[in-house]
Every structure is written in C-alpha cells, then in structure tokens.
Length: 462
Ligand code: UD1
Ligand code: MG
Picture 1: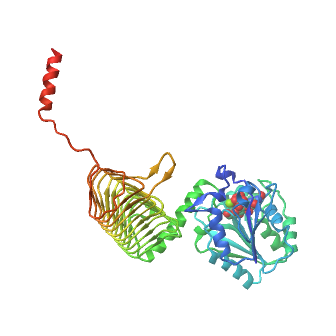
Picture 2 (picture 1 turned 180 degrees about the horizontal axis):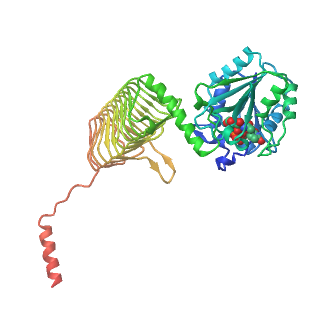
C-alpha cells in the first residue's frame, strides 16, 4: 500500500512565512507527527505532493518519503492527479491524506482501509460528526447518495449538517480508474478549484461503491488551517496524553493549564501542578511532585523528587531530590539521588553526586561535585576563559564545604574533605585532603578611626 500526502497548498489562512507543516506541535513539527502516524501503517512508500515552499519541506523528508511537484495549486483533485502521475500501478490500494490533520490515529486509518476492503468498496471515506462543522466539507446524504459540499459552496441548510469530511480517502481501485475520475472533475465552484471531494459523487454515478467510516473521536480529524486550529491541536494532543496519564494514576491540579507531550512518561502517584509544560522525551518517576510553573524538556527525573517553579532542559535528576524554587538546570546537568538544588541556582554541564546541596544563589558550570558537598550561597564557578574563549572544568571532591560567596576560578580542583572559607577567590588547585583554604584579604580594624575622621572633617568645615 502506498500513501499520498497532499501538502502543496499555500496555507493562506495560516498566515506564516514558514510552511504550516513545519510549525511546532508539542515538540515535533506537524510534518513529523503526521509521518509518525503514517509509517505505523507500514506503507511501501509515502509520496508527498509539494508546491508552496517545496525546498523547505523536501529537505525534511527521509528514506521512503518521496515528493512530486504541483507547480500551480489548482485544488486537491489536481494535487492528487499530480501525486499519481509517476506511479505505474496500484497494488493493495492507495491512501490519500492531507498534511494538516496530524491528530489522526493510525488505528483510525487502519480501520478505514479494513472496512473498505471488507465491504469490497472502491472508495473509503473518513468522516466525523462535529458540533461546530465550520470550515469542513459537509457530507450530504440523499437517497443513499453521498455528496460533499465545501463550506464556501454550501447553502444555509447544508451548513447546518454536522457530518463532515476528514480529508482522508482510501482508493481500492485501479490507477486508471482513479485517473478517469479525477479527469471528470470540474472546477465550477466558488473557489474555481478542482475538489477531490467531487470524486465521491463521480464514483457513485459510475455505480462504484463508497463506504464512509465515522471517526469515533471526532477531535482526531481536526484540520490545521489557521493559528486557532493549531492551538486547538496542541490542546487536544496534550489532553489526549493527560487522560492517558490520569488513567495510569497521575494527578493534575488543573490539567487545562498544562501542556504534556505525547512522548513524556510520568509514574504513578506523581502530582503535576498548575501551568506546567512537560515536553520531549521526558521521564518522571513515581510519587514526584512537580509544583506550579515548571518547564521540563527532554529530561529524566527519579522517584520521590520535588520540583518547584523551575526550568529543566536535557538533564537528569535522581531520586528524592529537591529542586527549586526558581532553579535553572541547563543541558547536561546530572544530579544523583538526594541532591538539593535551591532557589536561584543555575547549573549546566555538571555532575553533582549523591546527598550534596547547592541551596541558594549559585552558578555551577562545567563542574563535577562529589558526595555530601555543601556549596554556600552566592558561590560561582568562573568557568569561562574570555581570552581563549573556552570553558574550564571545576572538580570538587567528596565532603567539601564551600563557604558563601566564593569564586572558584577554573580550571581548578579541590580535594576531598576540604573547607573553603567564605568570600574566597580560589585560583589554584588544592590536592591535599582535609585542608582549610582561605583566599581573601585579612581583616583590618582601625580603632577610633571614625572619631578621628569626624574630627578632621569638623576642622576642615570650619
Ligand atoms: C479539505 C477538504 C474538506 C475537508 C478538509 C478536512 C477539499 C476540496 N476539501 O478542505 O472537504 O473537510 O480538507 O481537513 O478537498 N493542497 C494541495 N494542492 C492544492 C490544494 C490543496 O496539495 O492545490 C493540499 C493542502 O496543502 C492541504 C490539503 O491539500 O494539505 C487540503 O487543502 P486545504 O486547503 O487545507 O483544504 P480544506 O479547506 O482544509
Ligand atoms: Mg485543511
């Protein structure tokens, strides 16, 4: 079975300089999401009909995904005509779909194919019933004869029809017969376009059999024509995932305020607060608390961990950790179990071993921190060499206690069990364990200085 995806349209309603198929739908493009579903049907080939911004889309295609150009966008029937033009014959039918319906499930498409084959029909048509059918082709059935009327051509009575066309067709007939049907379609309609939907009326006039399969979840057929549709698709995909997670034992305080990617995994008894975005291939363990306003992308989080008001990207957090509020964990941050990262702490490309704490106001970059370490408030790793333009490493051993407001100028190494005095700027490595390291000016106290100073001022002012 081959699949043809119609994707040459200009998407004028979407209003973008970028093809609508390249817009983001919860971490993947509309194109990627559509392809993911279509490959689940094991087609021998997926052929795109491209036109508008052909180069941009063509460079996204992978093995088994071909394209053919529709230079003038004369309508969906014309697009299919072009899509079929380099095929020699059809075996096991051909599925035709549009690039802008990424919520369709593979099972829905499989069912359409099966039902068409089972009833020995020549065309299978996917339909749905929508409370608000605006914008979709309406399916009018009179005396068992199906006709599809586009929004712009529909009468008031036809506009009230809730049964709509999903834009997905399975053709179970010889190539020449499909081509004959497409040839018979005219563009006498309000948009002066060749509508693929007119194939249905033609097929019935030729005594061919058409079956229509109603999609049980009408949300699946959502066509992304505008920004409003894109928002609806993002919400729908996220809600689909949230329903699945709730069924698996995950709590949401207000799921409508959250966005959860289909790829994310969350363990039982975890609680997700308000306004959380959990994106990419994120894995969250069991019994975690993700408090309000967290943004977590492509990260893994162990069981029993709590995250508050924080951003975590491409990082790993172990079990029973506390992160935030207001922590920023940038790519390749690795926290082992029982680590505490507190408020206003930024970490990137660093490893922190078990039971260590970075509780307040720190920057840790390109560092490796041992077990049971405490990093005092305001401590930073000065990792950037502005002359060479490189980042240097900081290595802190086990049980090291770094006092508040220290600067560790990398490259630097601090041995196990060392104490670094508060306010120190450390520029040289200390490789001897159990040392106290002080790198600050000795305090000077000038007794009676204030009094003397005031006296002088007093005299000058006279
Ligand atoms: C289409 C259907 C409508 C259905 C809806 C479902 C037609 C005439 N109408 O309407 O019945 O309810 O989908 O979402 O088919 N395209 C081309 N070349 C063209 C024109 C369009 O490749 O010359 C492609 C577009 O890129 C798009 C698809 O065909 O992927 C459908 O076109 P679109 O303009 O989105 O049609 P709708 O108005 O959504
Ligand atoms: Mg559309």
